[in-house]
Image (tube, rainbow, N blue to C red; front, side):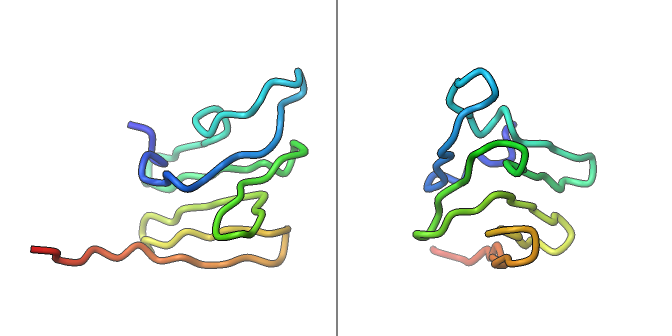
Length: 86
């Protein structure tokens, strides 16, 4: 299963070296630990979310946190929270 399936509001803006639009599943690396990463730093591309443009997203499965990088040093941290709804 694609680990980013729940990220419906993520939009990749950019193209690969062949001028083909990037797809999220093409640039996502998954690891046995459950961590995953989308790294667009080698492309002229970004992911737009919450009116900000990110070049890299890293999900830490142990922490259940998503680290979203605006550049190599500036990032935002989002936490995944499960709550009862019924």
